[in-house]
Amino acid sequence: MAVSEGYVGRLAPSPTGLLHLGHARTFWIAFERARNANGRLWLRDEDLDPQRSQPEFSQAMREDLHWLGITWDGEMRQSERIPAYREAMEELVRSGFVYPCNCSRKDLQQAMQAPHEDTDDEPVYAGRCRTAIGKLVHSTGLRAQTNYRFRVPDGEVISFVDEHAGPQSFVAGCDAAADLGDFIVWRKDGLPSYQLACVVDDAAMGITEVVRGRDLLKSTARQILLQRALGLTTPNHFHCDLMRDAAGVRLAKRHDALSLRALREQGLTPEGVIARFSVEAASMR
Image (cartoon, rainbow, N blue to C red; front, side, top):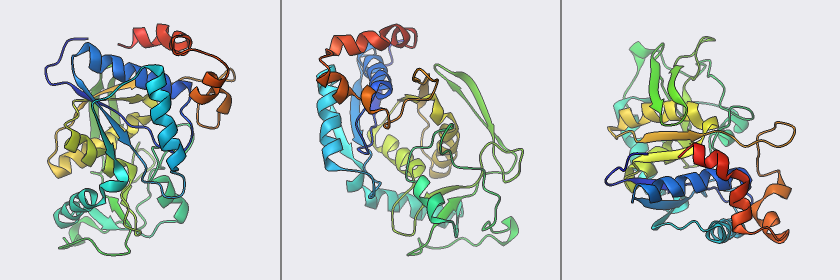
């Protein structure tokens, strides 16, 4: 990897369970890419989900990352940044990029979490609440107790070149041919979606490269649209291959036996954990 002056990366775990081996590999790759570039690394505690985020998991993820040998230069906690998200959301409202939406509770709850293509990725929205383009009214502010969706440009191809996965393209729209539709950006309880919070925080941190799993490739396309609407720079992206269990299922926090905490309790050393993914990690540097 070429050394990038001013490289800034980030680790972005959510305290909704114990970190597992797949998290460890992704975060180790992020750590090594920042270190190899003589750059800086943030830890962002993505604790916006009030139902699932727990203080004990927040503490555990810090302990487990330090145990593995991963260090960082600064921290940010999303639950402390609601005013920044609201400011960005008000700008989207004033600019006419979003519209009010009446969605199911399930749809809105999923918008708080990082989506995954093989489990709960946000489905293409059929446009039930979308205002006709010719009748779009620009509001002067964010309405209280209102859900909002971002209006994607119909038929536009959102493209980017990933540092690991290569060229990517996704079609935006509200029909069956689209890869991504109008997506949730704000909930009526006053909380932003995963997509909006990521964009605002990456800009505030000055992130130059986002390292995460390739199940978030489609989220990158959504975030590019938000960055464009807010006049923000899009960082480079490096989407790692996913780790899977013996049955081929993507590792998730339900895989308790493969959590870093469980592996530690089994007597595995940090070197032993790293050895389990070091060959794959080395190929992705």
